[in-house]
Image (tube, rainbow, N blue to C red; front, side, top):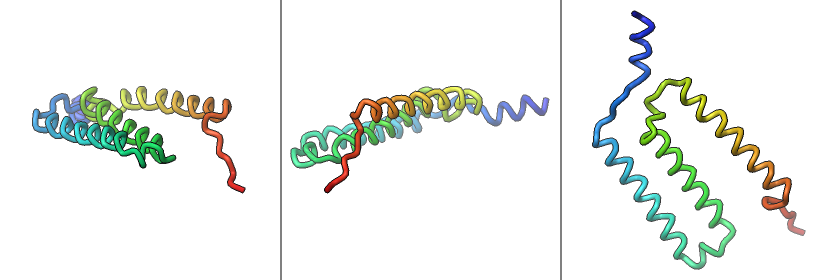
Length: 109
């Protein structure tokens, strides 16, 4: 019985609609910022444009996964089964980008 009570405490299955509305509003704001940055010619041509858009995309991805896929309220094992392979895949992709020179760092001088 004690084990089941702990599982129920760790696993909250339902969130209210107010939470979903706030999450949707946050995602909308991030999307508006992304589009706005794209239409700023000086920023869109700077070297900070792509990293900024990627960071905003990662934040939006994490929000969608946590709330709409219910990963935030799910068992810790399921979180680990999702985040672990995702981390390995991201590390492999970044390594391949460095390997093929797409993320090469050029020293000034």
